[in-house]
Image 1: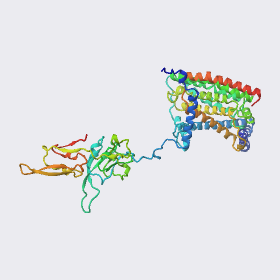
Image 2 (image 1 turned 135 degrees about the vertical axis):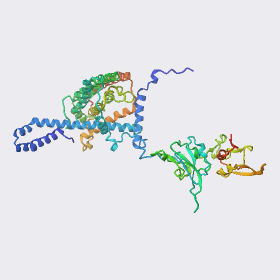
Image 3 (image 1 turned 120 degrees about the vertical axis):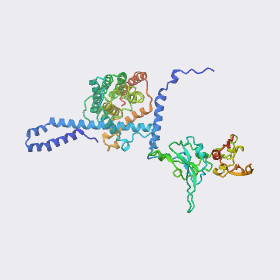
Image 4 (image 1 turned 180 degrees about the vertical axis):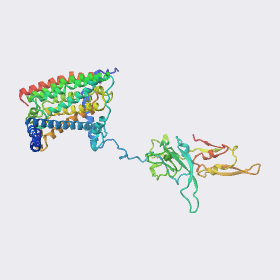
Length: 251
Length: 363
């Protein structure tokens, strides 16, 4: 099949393409932008209506947080750290309990929402706040109290899962991924029965059980991990003094 | 309904000089001065000054409003808001004017100082000179010579001189090229412009704006029989005013402002102002020759003639802005090809049509 040779005349726009079409187009545009307002949003006075899933600065629901530190570990810019603060709930006549809560350097935050995505209790949320300028660098480090935000349902971010085989089926709802998770595994030779993992576990998923007595007559304790309660936060791996615990990744 | 500015201001000046200042001077004892102030020569001179001042002010205000109109309309064409300084952006031009006024007057080392300084004066002077012959209504004008159409178009074609020496005096090769291009383009489009006007002159049988408008009031707006001439006139006027799509000498979006590169501060402000003053004059010539001037439907007689005229001028300038918003720029060779190969034959055909209509006595 011979290709049609384009002559020079075909390439020229001519009267219609050069004059009439753009004139009509601009006329339509002018009428449109005169009747409705132009696209410009005059920012300090007008603001765009944000969608519910807008990812602004991270927010914290203080009472839901268990202080596991997954947000701190997942943060790509390392702008989150855990600080020890007084709990908001306190009983009468007693000093407030000390708890660990995340503190966010919003100046370094890139608003990716990973902290909210990986939070096991959905205590970390994304908020629609984006006007974060301040006069000093200290002001934009949000401590856990300042980080609090009354979350609405749209503010939570879930890791949802749909299998490729389910994509075209009807009635399949994307669901949070809970079945497969990383779990710590124990190397028994290294364990010295100190039970620090059980103390530091935020969800109390680790229980120390005794397995007999050693030569000196002390009890041999080994951590037993409750797979349902574990949130794969790696706290036990970090606190282990002899590196006996490691995370086994789900492949 | 129209304002006779000569009668009004003449009466005002007579009342002021003869009835108020004259007796005061006579009471003091300056009888010679009193009779000198009351003489017709002095009264006439003061009246001319006042009329010229008022027409100049009105023309400049309309030109400034054209800048505002262009900014706002182009904004709407591009789906944005345009200027926002002051109420609906009206103060932007005054802010710009203040800005260019307080700038330092710099003359480039290599430039010819005399010609460099004279070029903006020539350009703005020639542009403002054209306000003289434009009548806003039967009574609102500075001068009404017998051949006002010819005079206006003659002044119109003086501008390339200023452009050329402005580009040359800057002593910069780009401004020189820009000036030559501008001069070539303006001279090339002068011919179709004049030929498209000739059709109107043949039909109306006069070279006077007043007579042409009177003809259109009694017969029909010239745009109806002379639609071809109107199209040629608008395109040629766009090229004459160096507006998009014929803004090759300037190309303010891409190049460095063409022949006005080396001009800064108030000199640039004056050149910019002269462009819009010429735009106003071009739009008003189109209004007077083709759109019936201050002619109006009879049931709208209560609106003054001057307002009708200005409304039509703003509509024609709006057409210029619309063309600017819609069209891409043409190349140098395309500019001259359009001018010589397309518009010139069309203008010649337009003359034939006018002669046929005149012979048959249709319009």
